[in-house]
Length: 79
Length: 159
Image (cartoon, rainbow over all chains, first blue to last red; front, side, top):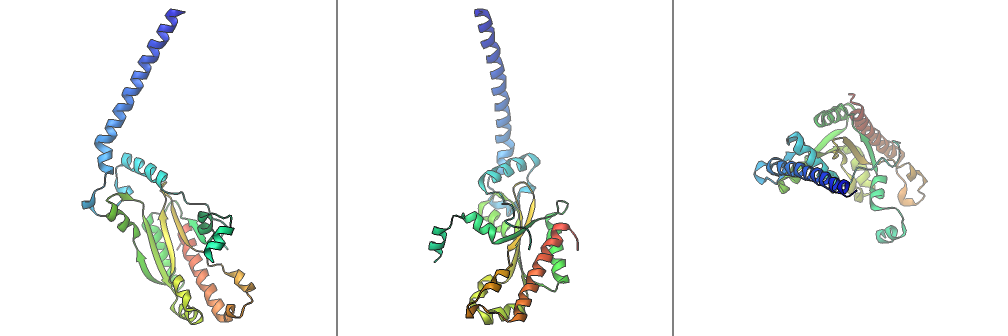
């Protein structure tokens, strides 16, 4: 029983470590490439979301979805 | 008066704005530029003059430095009907010219919106200051039909 518990914690620890490492890799990728693309750039003039790379565009659209209200369904059919 | 109305009403601000809006979702096959082009062509067909075009998103992005979603506002006018409405009520000038907004939402879908000009309920107005000449009512109806036609052409992609 005690050996089983030790094995369980060991395996859980390894799994958790792998997960955290993967997340760190993912976030560092975001910070180095995408976050730079998403940062305000006053010298570039007006820019649309679709001018971003596909990955940055995905992040930006998620940001905008969180910060602005969704368009409501029409209140009544066209008259 | 407005503070009393909003205080008594259970309708939210967003619901109120939505209630005042006529909107359609654009055909998913059309790009934003296609939608604008269709709108302009259809306006010509129904003899409705385009008098303005605001690329609002440019100011939003230039002022923030951030990428933004596209939103543009096109303005149309029938000067003859507009002038007659101003003769009836100069305060009506706050509603002209007619506007149609083309707006992209965060999911990438394109919407067309305008003020809902369905004023059929005005027929029930009895006050002396509420009576419009029948031909002016017809002119107002023609404008509403033109606005609807412009928007529905974009929504279907036909022109």
